[in-house]
Picture (tube, one colour):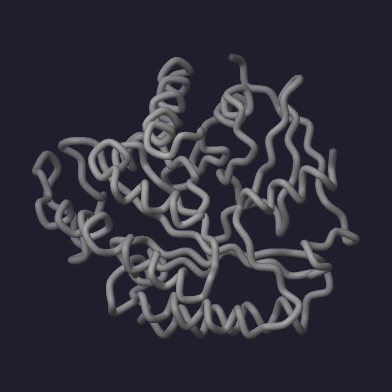
Length: 287
């Protein structure tokens, strides 16, 4: 498949979220796993091992997600009656099916997140990308009984043809983009897919691991962002709140996710929903 520039249609200032809200919030959980023999690129110590050595520390750090982190995130969301969009790697459906089943049964959206965090579309040829989409979707569907409708690649990095392949495979939305405040519609030939930017401003991984901020700093970032969006901005928009189960799925950070949900629930005239719901609203407005 040759890379081509898609036809793009974007929402205008008249757009409003369900209920007439100008501001929307999506709560995401990155529930991540790695292929056999692979580990997170960096562990909690912050200094990677020499090339070619298996990082047991990083591997164990990543395994906190399926053992404890995902369960804590689900408990917090249930407390606030909020439906989340949860990015799930295919390997987790393969090795931890009970967790994927629990996510689905709780009513959260499962967003396909590649087979493993080490399987990044830009590194694959067209056949490899097609197989990764098929394999990941099939593993998730084998647990939930339905194909995922959304996709976000590891590190939000697809390829020049990946969105077209997702549209071809029947996906409704993708999050490998950062170029708008709102979802937008991409047309690839006869097929369409909604792009939902993955905003990174309130995300535990870069905040804590890259920049070394405390958990409380993420709460402050949320409060400042919310105040700016509600009181200073005039255009419709949305932003993400994202945690990773192996990072702020831990008690030292999970309290912030809880506090943010509590504050979001107490704020009037905002919409809180999933990426699929956002895609459906954008699709209806632009089709």
